[in-house]
Amino acid sequence: MGGVAIARGRAAALAAGIAALVLAADLSSKAAVRDLIAPNESVPVIDGVVWLTHVRNAGAAFGMLQGLQLLFMGISAAVIVGVAVYLARGARHGGWTVVSLGLLAGGSAGNLYDRLTLGRVTDFVDFRWFPVFNAADAAISAGVIVLVLIVLFAKDDDAGEAAGAAASDEGNGE
Image 1 (cartoon, one colour):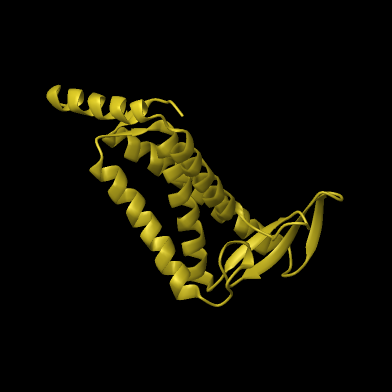
Image 2 (image 1 turned 45 degrees about the vertical axis):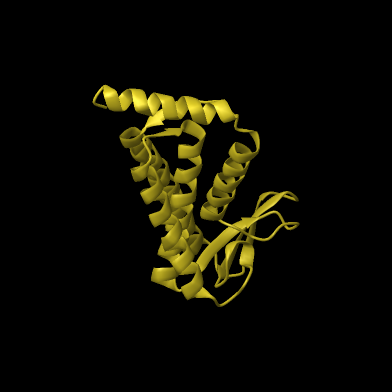
């Protein structure tokens, strides 16, 4: 997966911006669901395809592993800190890597906020053939998928080009 290498400061800013957008979308959509749909109530969006179903989830993504709130809060916090540290340490990062890290951090922050303030996560996207989920879960899943694709399909010379560009920038004072 080729792409544009992004300087450290710009990478962190871009990832933070993506994380903020994900967080805002996640928190506002969850608040709307809590305000407009009673728990366990389901409202069709596209009849026979997708529903909004208000689920109170005390487990992990997609309702797995119920009741392990402290573990999930720790994992979410570790992901957020790990993304921040990774972006702060490297000289340059690929554009898709930055996007995936922003998605992971924003989704983790959204679910962490719910766990800290409500003791559970609000889920609502319901296809009936898949576990009910929320925008944070979707962002985390998309971020992981992008990272897996990068690992599977990145060319060795992409990493070399990014390292060479970073060394070049250090000599230019960037």
